[in-house]
Length: 76
Image (cartoon, rainbow, N blue to C red):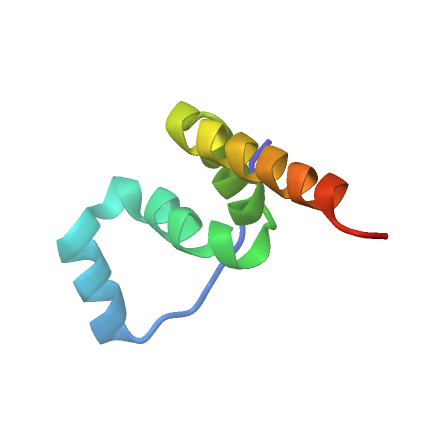
């Protein structure tokens, strides 16, 4: 669901935005800029991207297993 809001911009900023993205795409452009600053999804997105990297996950698993092996061999 989308909410409508009114914002005030300096005329030069508005004209630059209009030239850069066009009148029909301003809202999406502003939303895309604001989203990472107001929603805590960047950390989730980062973890999701790391989990899909099979090579990185394999290396992490090797590291964890080696660490567990080192702890098992350590004197108590």
